[in-house]
Image (cartoon, rainbow, N blue to C red; front, side, top):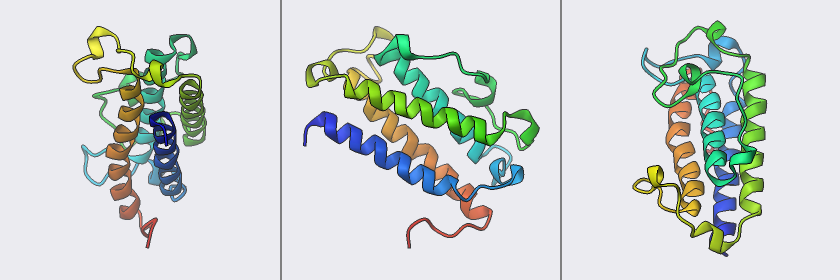
Amino acid sequence: MSSKECLERQLVKAREYTEKMLADFKTPADWTHQVHKNANHALWFVGHMCASDNFFISVVAPERAVKLPFTDDQFGMGSQPVSDAAAYPPPDEVLTLMRERRATLLDCLAKLDEADLAKPTPKELADFCPTIGGIFEMAVWHEGLHSGQVSVARRAIGAKPVFG
């Protein structure tokens, strides 16, 4: 399996797991349930994954990045989630955007070859993520990091484990 195929598989599998977990959030209270006042909730996660994928797209295919209809204060890096569902767009809207941005990120990957993946990232990302291929790796581990937080919120609303 090529590194490109491996990246695609990891991006797809990470999102399949995410989608299984998110299926259990039904009400506004579920979507914004925080296990403590500083914890991330499922709706924040969805918006943050959307914003993150859009950022990754801006690095690998800048012309395909979009202006998102929500603010960095809601879902950006360093944002602090709140339990008030009225502070956010409806979950279905944010889910639709999250899915579209991942589909676009996967399409960007499909258009690259192995040489493209080895190209350097812009200077401001070089220390953290030196290659274009590393952008896709970051998308995978970043989703995994935050999906663990969603898993805790999901169990706190009474959902059974996804596996088992």
